[in-house]
Image 1 (cartoon, rainbow, N blue to C red):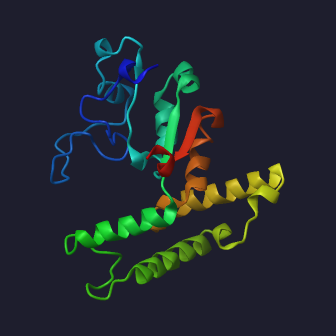
Image 2 (image 1 turned 45 degrees about the horizontal axis):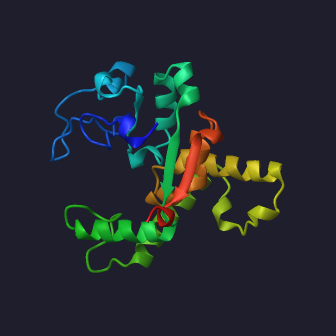
Length: 211
């Protein structure tokens, strides 16, 4: 369907339906209680405004929240699951992380940066603290730190690639809340989504390609 034939949500493009209520006010406080139901989700679109019966939304948090894919899958009818299409626009991980760091600093002192004290914060110390949290989480769950290896992905067999994806996905699911470094771990994120939807339903691109 063309972009003009797609219905957008009544609230805004980024509904955040699965990670926070769409009726949250400017202070971040929820002004309503919206349960995760099919009726609640579909109520954000007006059917009469979309003759194609195709709707679209874009909440970036959905990619790195390991619970969203299964929740969305559970709300959809079988025909919808097969027809659904997903677009993932990825930013180069280090650039994304530096941007996040600068954003957090701009919010100081309203937002603490992983407990580090003002005046002592550097990007290096910010990364070191989160890497420690990441490694500690992996140890607690007896998971392999596959990111620390030198992987020549192109030289791997199909089964080896699948094993790496499974390892990345397991690490992401267990430790996604331990550190914001996982926001840039795209293999694990996509691994979660492709457990519920076919890989052919995804278009994966980069921010550079979109600019």
